[in-house]
Structure formats: C-alpha cells, structure tokens
Length: 199
Image 1 (tube, rainbow, N blue to C red):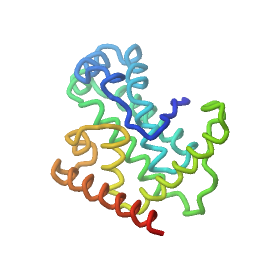
Image 2 (image 1 turned 90 degrees about the vertical axis):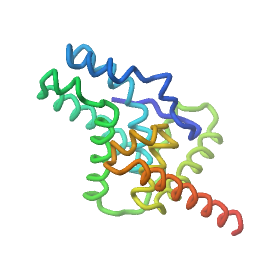
Image 3 (image 1 turned 45 degrees about the vertical axis):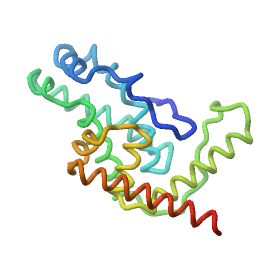
C-alpha cells in the first residue's frame, strides 16, 4: 500500500474524500469485501499523513498505515453485522492507527534521525524538494517538543483536520481536554518559532 503523500503541510480536506460515515458502516456491514476498499481510499492519506509526523520515518508511516487497515479488516471480519453498523468508523480506525504509532515508539530504540526519505517523483525541482524536506524535518523536531497528548491533538486537528469530538473519541479524552491540548500545543509551537527567529 503506497498512500499518496500530502504536500505543503496543509490539512487534508476530509469533506472532499470522506464518505458519509453512517452509510459506510452500513455498507461494510452488508458487504465487507466490496466496501472495505472505499474505507481504505477514504482514510489512507490521512492516516499516513499523521503517522509520518508521529513516527518521523516514511517507511514506518507506510507500515503503520498498512497495518492499520489490515487490523481493521481482520477485526471487522470477526464482527457481526449489527456490531459493524454501530461503529463510528473514523474514530475507530484512528484509534487503531494511534495505538500502532504508540507501540512503535515504545519498542523502537532511540537513534539519531537520518535524512528524510523524499519521494523523487513528487517534484521536478530538486531545490524545492530539498527545501520542503528541510522544513518537514524542522516541523517534526518542533512537534517532538510537545507532550504526547498535545502532539496527537495538534496533528489530528491541524494536519488531518478532524473535529474535536472525533479526536476526543479516538484518544479517550474529554472534548474540553482535547481543545486545551490543541491550544497549548499551538502556543508552544508559536513560542518555539519566536525563539528561533530571535536566535
């Protein structure tokens, strides 16, 4: 599975690629094999975009994205139709993805960050690719300075474009707490940017 990489750091517009969640759950319950590719197409770019920011490695992000949908399919295969219809699909899939990212972070040994993998087909301008790569690395380093809760909330809100309610459901935190995490995370990032400009 090769998810397409979001460029430019702008949030993914979920309204343009997202199927109606209730309808998708009904379709998955009626015919899992026929409908599951729609679930993958709907969510894979967002999952990959968040995973690459959490893992800081393209290959790890691809692995997390693929494993997320493998696990989702296996789980749905074991559920009866009534249970599938009751699932809020997006938060459910995001919970799987976040757990995989956390597990990877716990088990992977800490090592110096190597150069970022750049998709050579992404641009014809090597200078632009180098600048984009450097900026992405800098943002990943800044995100690393946030708490895990802040980083998760900021990425899901401002990179993926999830509403606060879904972030709360995905992370198991209250909506007010998620809003506070996003606010504090953004403020921390602003302070980091100001300090970088001063130095």
